[in-house]
Image (cartoon, rainbow, N blue to C red; front, side, top):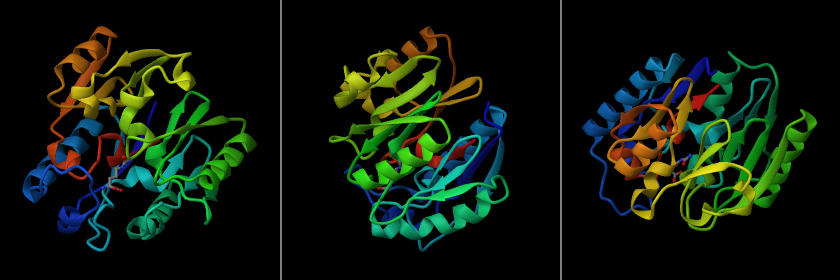
Length: 253
Ligand code: CIR
């Protein structure tokens, strides 16, 4: 069960953040509404939410997931793989000191972003992407090994992060799309295949008794419901415009 979540209000500079999506400029008012609905949904799932204020100097900082990897015993502060996001980790580290005693740090030349790390029980899949390099993955694996977890790397070619295309929604059940369909690393898990026209919905989060998923992806929604889940749908158009999915918007622990 997750007890806590950390989220961060998007600043006005969000509209100038990094993106490859080509879906137009985000509408800031709409974005705030969608973010507020996301926070309310987390609360409905029963987690205590820490809401951080906006930081205009970091346009992408509402995507807090990328700054840390959390387990029940320790926190790993990442080293984001893009210069404009590097300074985001300082604030998160100080907030996490309220919850954790044991910290590790991904060190240069290693880079790693939390969006590339998918925990499935005691195993961590680590995406090798444009943001997470081999050295960053190696350092994380070493930290995980020292605590009795396992880790394996998964090359990510077509997506920003590993979790853009894969989610874990319950014991043994994953959502996969695109290059991750029939990927040998995920073969041992039951899979819901998310069709290409709904691939944005491959990024869902299981938060206690609910799956939070983006609104408007009928086929995927039906499959998740058929797997026995209660769903909370979130309007996510303004996050999508900046390559962000629902997992990216919080740290859950
Ligand atoms: C970025 O390019 O870093 C942001 N615009 C989007 C980050 C999304 N984060 C995630 O998938 N974990």
